[in-house]
Image 1: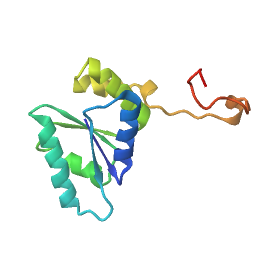
Image 2: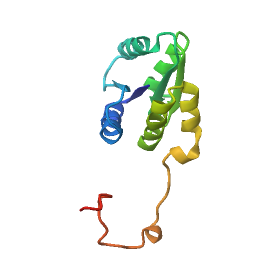
Image 3: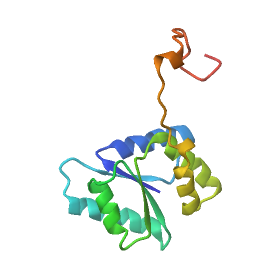
Length: 142
């Protein structure tokens, strides 16, 4: 599994993911500001070729249509790459925790497609209920 994005978004997401679920074998390849697209392609191709070994690679991307996405799509002509766009932390947590018990790319894609794992919800002030003294931690000992 490889995370790609414009700027350090994928690196920060990976650090946060590792903080929550423990160290993973996931890697992050950011497109740095001012980086030449050909240099980025070479960097991503090195990572894909290192991780593919003829198997499928699952690439999570920040957004469809940008240079990171287009680079992964271009490399999919040579490698077995599945691309998931719109990556977010809840989605990655669901995939990684399930992937440990079932390291199958097709299963991981089904996990991503499950709307419960997309982590998107709208909370209005009425939903919150105005409790001003709620704890900021789920740790009951605090």
